[in-house]
Image 1 (cartoon, rainbow, N blue to C red):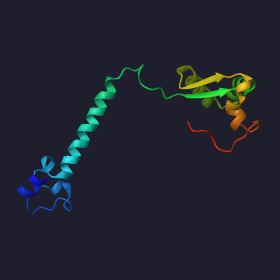
Image 2: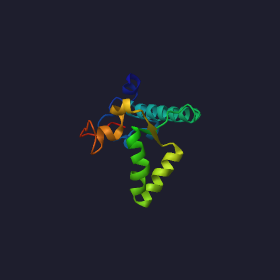
Image 3: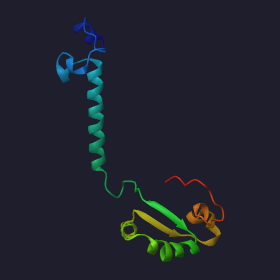
Length: 131
């Protein structure tokens, strides 16, 4: 920054739009230095994320846990009652693994999605869980 002030003593880089700076995108002012640094960081992150194997990337799937009663209700009543479009999307999501349905034992029913948040739940909560 001191070099920039020495080279351009009368230039007010803070109050001048970036496109009017001397040298255009190669201007040595702190504003353009910051922009170049951010571009380099973005490029580095992009290339690093491409080099990671698909197996090592964190999965972004949704896991729903159901007690045995609600597990059967979900597959035998809820999915068949959905409109065709949503039924197909749900089945595709289940096959791809984007949505994972787990059946948990009765003694863990406090973790059941419907027991906690459903309309007839044993421990009904008014807010949905974070995903």
